[in-house]
Amino acid sequence: MPEPAPETLAAVVELVRETLALEAEAPVAAGDLLFYDHGFTSMDLLDLLFRVEERFGVKIPEGTLAGLARGGLPEAEFCGDDGVLTAAGRAQLMALLHDTPPETFPERVHRQTLPRYCTVAAIARLAERRRGGA
Image (tube, rainbow, N blue to C red):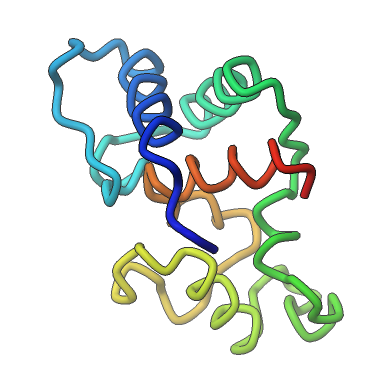
């Protein structure tokens, strides 16, 4: 997935600051991990995604990230019955979230935890992708 346009990234950075009630000059960078670098909670992520939907006029349904990571893989090849990604599923997730340091991903990634590995830039790319109708 190509890098987000600078104006999209700037808007998402602003939305991250708003979500966390940070000062306008608080450091938020494209490569920052929402959960690890900014202490996001699940509720913060929902708030951010709502703000992204509002700002960009898009819908981001639940499971969007998993769907993007799965790509053309059949569900059984992406994720096991226990909700843990297969090796192929994990590889696809890591390719989608290419700006997340590889060591951040545990060996066993549960489908429910996928947003924990998103960077600020990944959310900007998601917004652009949704805006493009994907």
